[in-house]
Image (cartoon, rainbow, N blue to C red; front, side, top):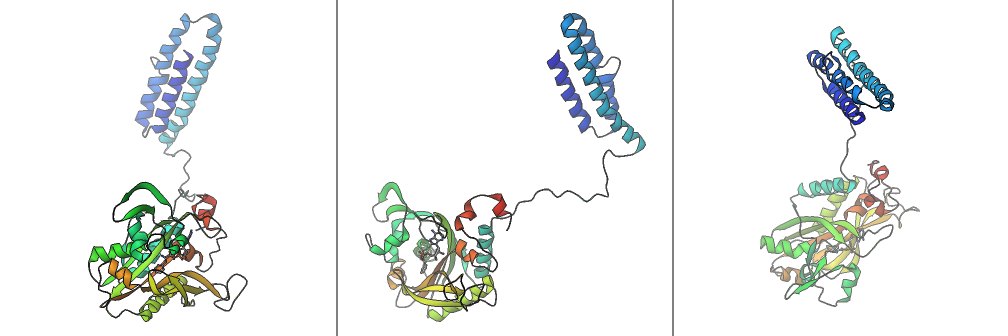
Length: 341
Ligand code: FA5
């Protein structure tokens, strides 16, 4: 009996809350509280209860009857008088909680659109790829010491007779030869943005991060095109008062190779406590090595090209006003941190 009464109460209150017109409310009142309504029918079953149960069940019965009546009455009154229950239309609305894109996703969208404006095509290549594309075709034969820099995760799977082992791509440069194969011939202007993986974790390294890789191949491409493209990106992404510079460096797949720096957002190149003599390191770049063009079956006598590859997270951190003390925070899924962006 107790179960039956409690279920009845829940069912009645749910129907009253959902009722949208006075006729429905009247029908519910008759159904539950009327002379031949459900509650009166139940009260007839009281006779069969033991004496000790009668008092307890009677109290519950009265409570439920008055709960249903209290839910019905004001709603019916309001309909009759034309007043809508608890509704003050002069109060400001309550904004429903609204999510937003992850800062790294926003950065990827911004980076893509900056390069697309000057004719680059956004592409995406596998994040789990063959050794051939990640290393061998990039002028890094098996057991070349330069490979160590990429601290690569190798998948425990059978090797391909020609393409070698399967790796979690440690950089987006695996897209270079893939893009040459896709298009077959220059001109090539790609921007490849994808996840990369390395066995690294500290304040400036995450085991999973993103890179964006630019690759341009055509006739008569030289370093001035590389520098011009970098300058264009730096002004668009960081602002017109920021500058870039190329520093000599070494990568197996570019010759000559550079590291690209951008002026510090605090001191704008003068030098301060937060930067190295006014400059922050953005990433690698260089002129595509002839061996890489050969691996992509492109005539290295006729065509030249440049490439660059930078971390999305680090590049985003160098934007004015963003001070992220630990890169790993970006992937900690802490809503208090992410809400700030
Ligand atoms: C490379 O990965 C080269 N493939 C870049 C390149 C492309 C050079 C084309 C020449 C031509 P490097 O290992 O320096 O280079 O990484 C490039 C950038 O990726 C770094 O500057 C940094 O911004 C980012 N990066 C590298 N490892 C991590 C990591 N564990 N966490 C976050 N960002 C990282």
